[in-house]
Image 1 (cartoon, rainbow, N blue to C red):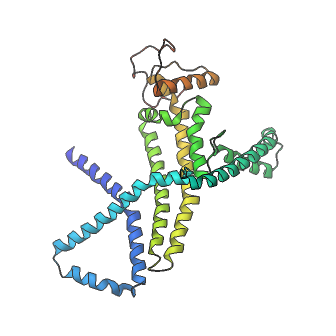
Image 2: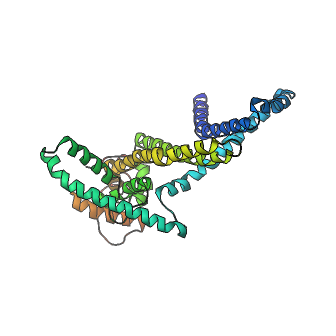
Image 3: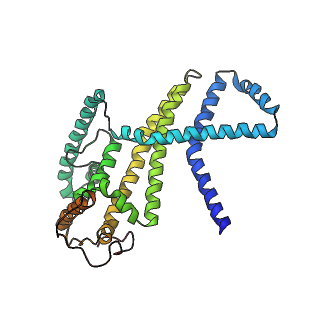
Amino acid sequence: MSATFWDGIGERLAERWASVSIPALTFWLGGLFAWMLGHHGTGALEPAAAWIGRHSAVVQAAVLLAGLLAVAATGLVIGRLTAPALALLEGYWWPWPLQPLRRRLTKRVAERAVDAGDCFQTLVGPVLDGTATDEQREEFARVDHMLRRLPTGSRLMPTSTGNTLRAAETRPIDKYGLDAVALWPHLWLLLPEVTRSELAAARRSLDTAVGACIWGVLFTAFTPLTWWALPLGLAVAAAAAWVWVPARAEVFADLVEAAFDLHRGALYRQLRWPLPANPAEERASGRLLTQYLVRGLSGTTPAFSNGALGAAAEPGSPAP
């Protein structure tokens, strides 16, 4: 048992180190290559290699360890920056000089949403009754996908990533009356392990893409050493911001929405809350349940179901 425990700890630490340090190591190796190009190739490394070679194995190991720790430290720093960087990619631009740009981009998104909604209404009839052409079905699929990635009402964001994640956050309110942001910690504790693993993996993938954007921007700092650091760094940052991050945000958003679709019933059962009988009743009940968990309720309604508090159902039981 002890050996198995320590083997598991070692594997998790190795995985954690790899996820944090491999991007940082790639960044610094790229910077080293840029420095070598600006200092006559590999010959610039000979003094450092000679100095290390004159010392004992203990010193060499210490130098190697210090290098690995420095690489891991930079990886951890960038990891801490992924959350604010993701907020920027979503379009949460708080400084006042950026507000006009945010409003202009959001207005453009709103105009496209209106056009997409009109197109959807035009095509939905022919698609449902089977008279649509192949081109119309393709256009309907494109418009339907676009509308799915947009939140409703005044919740629009200026970027595709922001709209994708905002739509996943707000759709449980529209469908079930449940505030996904406020209730996510409660639902998370009730999700089955396989669901939590999938969600965690999708979030790590999203954070990795955001980290690639940060690393790309930082790589441009090597431009004084070699000119190609600027276009390469900007290309990586642009690809991450406009391709990788939106694609991985869609996967994460779909899983968050699916978690509420399949497991929201666990919230009702675990809290002994009466299960709604139909969609209209569920939206009203969901709003009341959100209020109960966020601010609390007083009075005698709704009446709790029988059974001990917290013992109604297995974690992750699907809604009926």
